[in-house]
Image 1 (cartoon, rainbow, N blue to C red):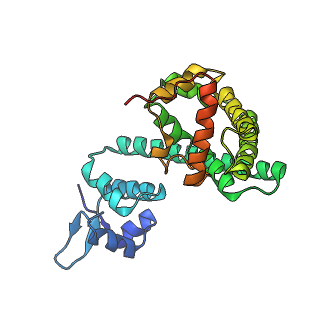
Image 2 (cartoon, rainbow, N blue to C red):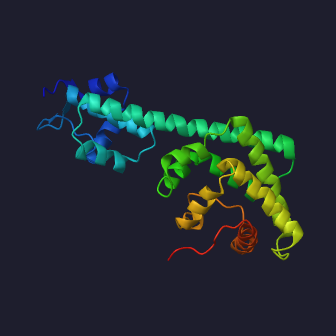
Image 3 (cartoon, rainbow, N blue to C red):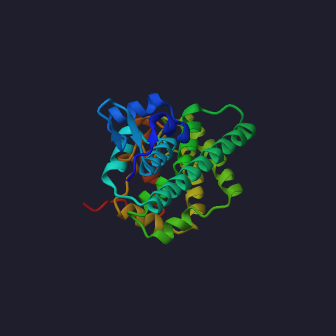
Length: 255
């Protein structure tokens, strides 16, 4: 490993400031290959590769602390590094595409529905953005093939369902406090379960499997964003329990 670039040459070659290189040296993120007795810093071609990793990981949103873990705990070849960065970039690309899709849905929902309860609106958008995380979580409870089927909905159909869900949730919020067994409440639950049936292909066994698995999205508040308050959630749970008991789904979870 030949140290052949002065700090000035290295900064110019990499498009990094000398001040940044000093800081990376101080925190042991990127130390020069050679520091002379007089304090002059010199860098090598290996340092060029390491800095490229740092810049890419920083662009991907990693903290310097996390980057330091990657740099020092993993012995990567240049190919390994580039492969890892490509994988991370593709994931970031997918996240950006999900955000763009969520914004498109948001604009279309506002055009079709006008004023919307902000908590419902935010909930729908967040759940669109976190679709990939939802899929991975569900795969821990039900077969991967069934999970993929749940999410293989055409974009136009998904938007239609989101608009219907928005309307149902808005009306449920207005009815909060009524008897959960009342006709008006149960009609809305029926409409909502109709959307669930569309998603599952009218597969009541899948709904039963989900319930039997002990799955509870309330255990993952950061993963599944709810537009309802805790009190509304309890009321809604009673209404749904009444409905699906009528549908013949056993509600007793296994201990």
